Length: 93
Image (cartoon, rainbow, N blue to C red; front, side):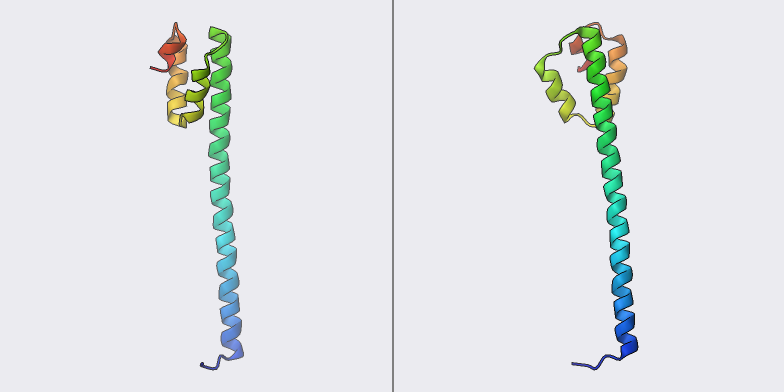
């Protein structure tokens, strides 16, 4: 085993600390992006369900399933269809 000088040891410890700090920052950023995306989806889903209920009354159970499985782009597309739909089924075609 090779001898490590105190300068080398300090440098290694500093490198490890910097790496850990960067890892934490990257993890926090990813977590925030995931949280924002989930929040946006939840908000769109809740608003779409509320408008569907206002417009068509009690919605069938299959609507909840479709909303839960949809991505944000699909929710946006359904929101646009809702404007012109005369029946709830037309929204999800």
